[in-house]
Length: 64
Image 1 (cartoon, rainbow, N blue to C red):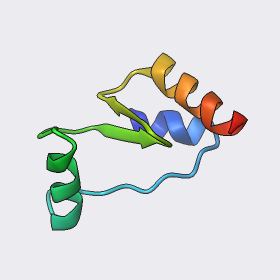
Image 2 (image 1 turned 90 degrees about the vertical axis):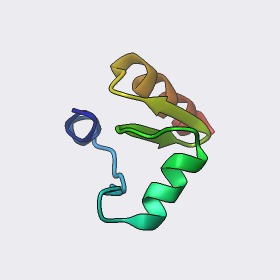
Image 3 (image 1 turned 180 degrees about the horizontal axis):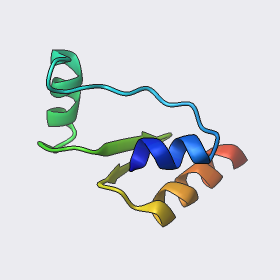
Image 4 (image 1 turned 45 degrees about the vertical axis):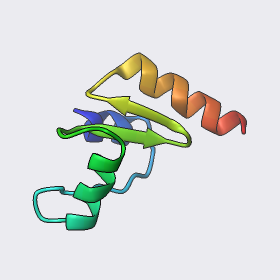
């Protein structure tokens, strides 16, 4: 759902498939997570699908 949401918002994103991307898996674990989705927008880290949190983080990023 996160990918679809970001696409609908017109945002570009980079996907890391932690099943096959070992560096992506290391990054996920270093942030204290062991499951996905985890979305990083600027300095905001959002666990799971949280539309309002994603919108807020995107708005803050655009203001910066």
